[in-house]
Image (cartoon, rainbow, N blue to C red; front, side):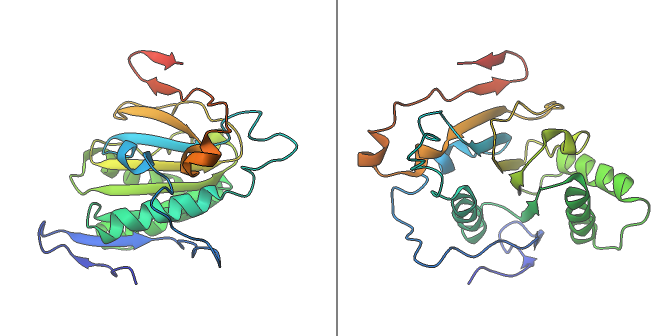
Length: 216
């Protein structure tokens, strides 16, 4: 069982987690090769998106269609939380702007320890500003993001945080990446065992950096 909210003995900060982290699916096996390399890429200041990586992967056989982006995200989030690598875990079902705003309002109450006042948009703006400046180590998971414009003005960023996105389509870099170290898109085949990964032609992983633009 994951630790509940409480003080971090080492850092002396209040740990908290908000949002419903889905359970692992029945029969899902967390093998050592699951999500290999992804955790190492999800460093403070980074944004990482688990999205379809190639037309091959989404072809008639669709052998990546059921591999479970959300399941990978659950493993990564719980691993970081249980290891104490993050002080705040904010899991958001990002299917609409309204759902993102609702999650930010809940996270604001947990972060500041008081009931938020004002509109959902103003509360969310204050939380986004806090994420930029806080030294608390945080992870925001934007699960099942459907429309990137839903995050206009709401994109989480900051040197102490990590952002993990799952989505149904290839995403562009954040629209306001002022404090984001990089935007890395990892094809979903990254979590497959070697024998399966070898059948994938290996579409390029793109890293978008604010100062250099898109790179192949």
